[in-house]
Amino acid sequence: MNIIESVDQLGSLNAQIAALSKQADAIKSQLRKSGAGEYRGSLFRAVVSERSASRIDSDKVRNLLSEEQLAEVISEVRSTSVSLYDL
Image 1 (tube, rainbow, N blue to C red):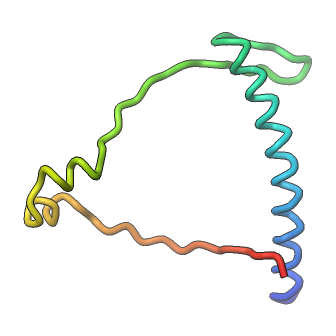
Image 2 (cartoon, rainbow, N blue to C red):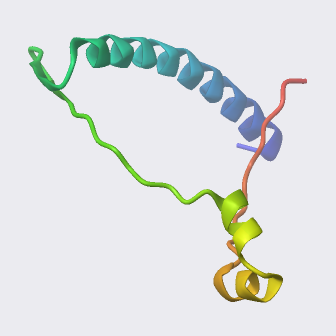
């Protein structure tokens, strides 16, 4: 498969994934509305659980720390991504 065919196949797969994700999200929403607990189907089991998490407000941290302090705690993370657009 050449690069052009690969790009087109990726686009087709992403469209299928998007449609399936929409269906899965609707089912997950229904399960969340049912509340925490375990739900069994014929083939699969779903567990709905609730949790809380703490987050750091980076804007407030930047306002509280000096530039030198920020330089000590900030690290660069590099990544490579692939973006796909319709023609």
